[in-house]
Amino acid sequence: KAGVTQTPRYLIKTRGQQVTLSCSPISGHRSVSWYQQTPGQGLQFLFEYFSETQRNKGNFPGRFSGRQFSNSRSEMNVSTLELGDSALYLCASSLAGTLYGYTFGSGTRLTVV
Amino acid sequence: DQQVKQNSPSLSVQEGRISILNCDYTNSMFDYFLWYKKYPAEGPTFLISISSIKDKNEDGRFTVFLNKSAKHLSLHIVPSQPGDSAVYFCAASGSNTGNQFYFGTGTSLTVIP
Image (cartoon, rainbow over all chains, first blue to last red):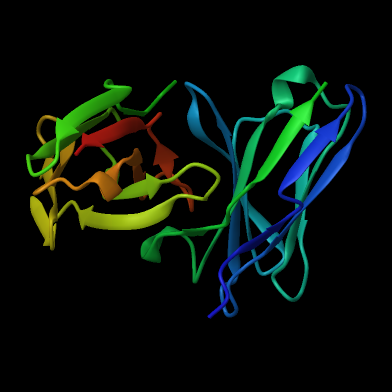
């Protein structure tokens, strides 16, 4: 079966711009979580969506937002980009949250200049 | 506050020997733990898990040990192979974490042929 697909793979944006990242989960997976990975910080949880509803949110500013569509595809948006937003953004899908673990996509590498 | 810690950023091991990767956590409510392996330019892939009702779980060359009193888990790889060279993340979740995994900062394992 197809894995978790994230697009685009790479992005370069300028400070102050906004960006939208996309994630298509494994077919049948209804939970989608987003993580930010930066050197030295590991994976930091952004938010989790299940059946189009945000169930959990990490400790990130309101510039970070997301949504999930009826087909479980999810998008993440970052507005007013800052240099510190440069990171690998990972999407993970699961059947129903943490119980069965996650399957991760390959990530979107965002560089803010 | 980092609730899951991997205090060794890197580890080098000779091929055929044992690799031991360590992970400490602070939240006593964590009851489910996973290890992920990550190659460059790829998303993390699930390796092995353990729940708090067990103190050991084995899958082929990989064994995870859990010491709840010490809030410590470790991943043993025996024998280590060059293809095991990757970054390893431990992750934890619990009844009070919602549908969220807390990740460590990762340990980069290099297996020397």
